[in-house]
Structures are given as C-alpha cells and as structure tokens.
Image 1 (cartoon, rainbow, N blue to C red):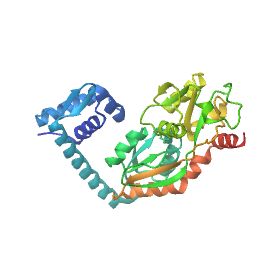
Image 2 (image 1 turned 90 degrees about the vertical axis):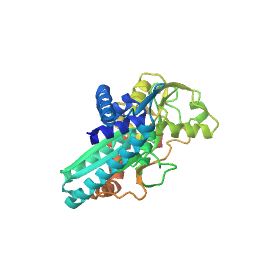
Image 3 (image 1 turned 135 degrees about the horizontal axis):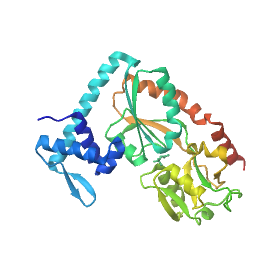
Image 4 (image 1 turned 135 degrees about the vertical axis):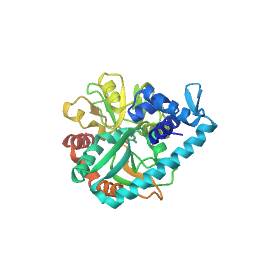
Length: 314
Ligand code: PGA
C-alpha cells in the first residue's frame, strides 16, 4: 500500500468541506488535482471514500475510518516535526495560522515583523471566514487561530489582542451619510449588503439588529469584505465591516462611516488555540509577538485612526 501524507491531508480537506471545489480553494490547487489525490488514495486503499449526496461529498463508512486515521497520522507527524523544531529553537520551524478574512488587513504586518526577526521560519496562513476558522480550531489544525470575537462553545484558550470595532458604511452621497446619531430602526429600512453565512461580521451585525427586534433587508449577499466595499461604492446599499478593513478607503474618501446609535460595535481581536494543545517554540514566540504588538499594529495606520476619530467626533 503506497499512500502519502499529501493524499491524506487533501482527503481531510475534502471531507471537511464536503466539496472538491472548496478543498481546492483552501489548498490552492486545481479541482482536478484534488480529485486525483483522492482517487489515488482510494485506489491504494481499495475502498470508496466519498459518496456524492446531492451537491455534497460525504465520507462513506470506510471514509470515516480514513478521516480518523488521517487525523491521527498527521497529528503524529506534526508532533514529531514540532519536537524536532523545538530542538532547533527559533532558527527554523513552521508556523500554521488560520485567520478570519477581516484580520488579513493587519495580521500580515505583524507576520512580516516576526519573519524578519526569525528568517528561518516557514509560515502557512489560511484566510477564511469565522465558521471555517472555528472548524479548524475544533480540529486543532493550526498552531494559532485569529478571530474577530471570542470563539463560543469550544474548549479553547483565547486572548484578546486588540480592539476590533465594527462600523456601518455608506457611499458619501447617501442620504444617511451626513446625519448624526441615526437610530438603528432607520438603518434597518435601507437595503443592506451582507457577508455570506458563517461570517463573523454578518453574525455580529445581525445579532445587534435582532436584539432590537429588527431584521436587515438584505439586498445582496457577498463573499468578501472587498466585494462589500465595492458594492457600497457602487450604490447598492449599506454595509457592515470591521473598521480595520477600511485602511485604504479612508484615504480616498470613497466610503463614509455612518454615525449610528450603538455603533461602532466594540469587539476584540482574539488569538485562540485548543486548551491543552502543546504550543511549539515558534507558535509561543508568535503568540508573545501578537500580545506585545497587535494593538499597535492595528492602530498604526494613520487613515484607520482618522476614520475612527471622525466617527467618534461627528
Ligand atoms: P469574518 O470575520 O466576517 O471574515 O468571518 C470575522 C469577524 O470579524 O468577526
């Protein structure tokens, strides 16, 4: 039997997403390449691993056994690599991170500083939405995860590292753009652009309005922060975004932060890992780096500071 670690990790990704396409996106591979890896694994093991049920690829009974075995194998290899890397200290090693899409606006800066100081370290960074990061956190797939709010319902260690306010945005010529202290009821009458289900941004904003007995009239669902911004600029409606996603637009004046009562929603960026997980020397060093520098990195951009100040003053 000739099976490879690569095949096992590709299969795990397909099983987790129940989709070849989503796994290909996550792994940065083409869909046929993912399909081939799974097929080769099936051929080597002599079993069918996945059943197509509607649009979903679900593990068969044999597939579930292989999911379990693949997790144990990859964990064991990961632990072995970690012990060896620990022996070498920070000179070399691997850091795997999963971050929510809103964190991509500040995290790379922190990662850049860390990698400059520790050039031997190889980093794998997964950028996805909250639901997917929570699934990875539950399966202990990464050294550290970064989320926009604390993870709920998981036995994890989570530390707040910086403020993560959520703001409502409009085009500068929108009728609400010049108003102050806008009641949430007024906002809930406007067409709204929401992130996809599973997004922490969407969850937070929907919770705020639901707590007031309001439902946002969704004009369109969009799968990324950038798509939300472009749709707001295009005049399709209002949007909700983590303030840290607005670093660039602050300079061009293409977007306006609305002064809505109750906003910005105050949240904190969180770094999390499963309770009891042994952190490698590299992961611990990066965690320390985040705790020491995240606040400063988040507040660093002069434009970000300006947007926040404007929102507070108007
Ligand atoms: P997300 O970000 O919307 O990309 O899931 C999470 C968050 O900011 O809470």
